[in-house]
Length: 124
Image 1 (cartoon, rainbow, N blue to C red):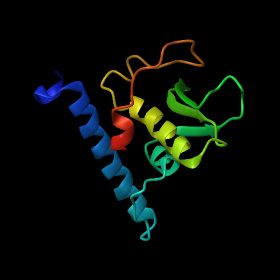
Image 2 (cartoon, rainbow, N blue to C red):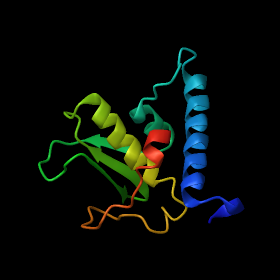
Image 3 (spheres, rainbow, N blue to C red):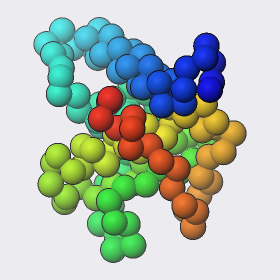
Image 4 (cartoon, rainbow, N blue to C red):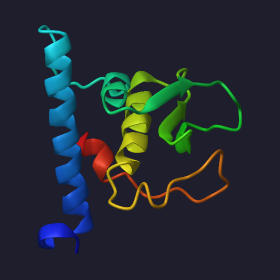
């Protein structure tokens, strides 16, 4: 259980919806023609202050998030199919929704097991 008696999964889903609403509001202020869904994860990440960098390195299977200079950064493979790329980006964005994300970030390029974020990716 976390804040307000919600389960961790419920809490993360609520935070995902709140972050999307925040991104939607900011993007509508910038562009009156903004009309999601579907959401573009690169725009959502940008509005949320998350850097995204395309890479074609063979060691990166799909995507990963880590903290660089105090800011979340996502590395992703842009040559993957669009739907897969979108899911991967939202999966990585979802890591930032966990209550302990900043207290337990992945510094640099870690060799650490990923934190499960899949329940939040579909909500995003």
